[in-house]
Length: 338
Image 1 (tube, rainbow, N blue to C red):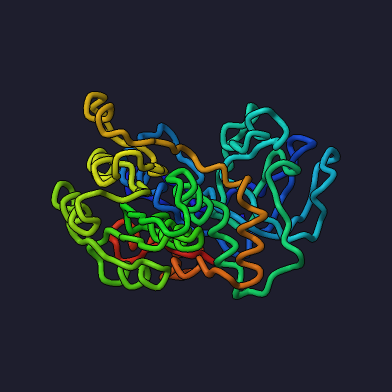
Image 2: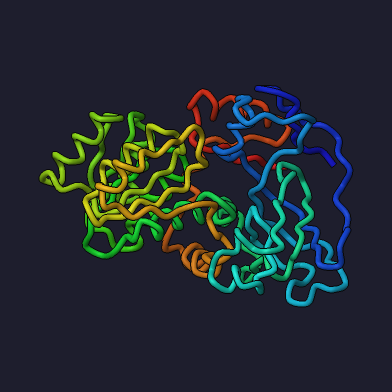
């Protein structure tokens, strides 16, 4: 089996890897009709998150079940399934509270930029579609494994409600799908922060009513201007830098909510400023498993089309170009076909 392996900063290679096998009786093996590069993969790719050995890449996946362990009871061979980047048993107290990404037995699912994948804790992690999907639905179903589920969590954590104003910091795939999520949850006004015309266009297609090109203090001032000096009711922070987090907090009205899902890098909060801001903060790794049934239904019935964030499709053998295109912001998100 061929799969992507990261050897060092900006050095990703496609090479022969051992095909996955059942290790634990709760495992499943799935065949992947498509895979992709995630924005969070770029932290490793750029050398910002250090690692010490060659690392198989990819954590977003959907596909057909090829084999299951003897303890798997609800997932069957031949089903088309989607799972989260964190495997979960879906039975522990944290899972029952809706935070499967903090499952007491969670395992990170990695190595998905390949033709096949081992998924631990299959019964608690995987959700099957009603039937095998048509090929045109696969990109949207693939987004549910991470970026759509993460954008949805950002909107939920930011307490998006019908008739309110939301702002989205970040115009990557998660930010754009945060716009789509806020629209689906009924936000009346959605302010997307973006400097890139293709991303602005997609943001408007997903439901953005306003575009703000400014960043930092200028971006905050522009949102204050658009909201008559009040600030947004809900702000979705989808980047993970100190600047983006402060921009999100300062753009939120007193009593408003920030949902933060960008993996934090260098974020330091001034607790004195936060104390007087009267802003709610909630976020973390998205509990994708909680949202999968609802999101599968929305995609299956063609009420949303999050697969539009894939603006570059390549064969898996060109995975290095897929990374380069995203690193250089020539692509929002790369779809890879094994």
